Image (cartoon, rainbow, N blue to C red; front, side):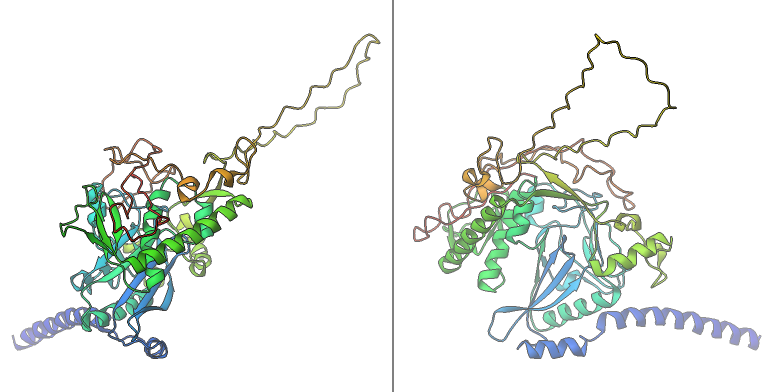
Length: 470
């Protein structure tokens, strides 16, 4: 009897030890210190370990930047992390199950940190925000996490997320209430804007660029609000009323100094885009099989996929595999567009002629005339530098409004939500909405300019971007 009791006690202790080990492991994950090299980098850049942070992510370049406030009060870039995996296409997330990683301005609070994540560590981005809800968009639990796999999230390696998590945790310990995450389709450079000038999401991206420009010119975290179904930055209602995400923007009070600097930057960017278009920069769209990853990971992950080994072989966690390894084999497909934004016609390959057995040539009567068919005329495709009438395209594209479509865009979003890509959607996560739209519609929304009704002291050349109903 005593031996049996000792055996039971030993087994109970063993089980308790396993449970404690699991709890201890998770506790260790969430409490890992900021790496000493990163702390040294903070000191070198005149940053406190407890100073506020700001995160910026870019799908096309597959990069996640961590910015941190210096002792001067302005933000500076601390580190850039290569993103191990993101899913979907360039463009915003619209519905549950579309595998789209969100784009927009999001706030991460301490309550959104998840030390018990199945994906090592994670934090919730805060999707849907007020902007997303104004469009009726659906989805939940959109994260930045580890495990290098994504079904609508931004995924890092376990080592990377441990460091980012620790940096954010220390900022919260220093008193920061929320960390702003600026999720972008790409770096808002003139080259990217010129190449993607016909994308159906361009009006939305231009609205995101406004916020990015506010940060770039001030190196301060922009205040973000939503009215008229668009983002507004560093602005408040002139009469002190609350901004309604779905209602038209009232007259806005803005910081004139920042507004003028942003307007100057926008004019310079517009000029660069126009120069690139006029010099022949081709308009393109990128089509991903299912998202992408940084080049530093892509070759390694492609080799893993080709060997039919799960992408979690490094951590032996195949039960978490939700990414499509085959989607990374060749990277995105680059599709060239003509001056009307349509895909350029591709000449079909000529069939291979199989030589017939040699035969004696038939005699040709003297009165017979042999007529050689004239070659078929090839279709004329307008180039990026010339419009359909042969005149320089830049002559009729005087600003972002001309470069990227009409400013007269419908405001309301219809109930039918287009799928984010023409490619078939891959298998969705458990519980995901299986519905999808019947096709895409080329729809844009005319919404009030950011500075309409603002103080009269603003310069007349201040750009006002519009938002597309998407």
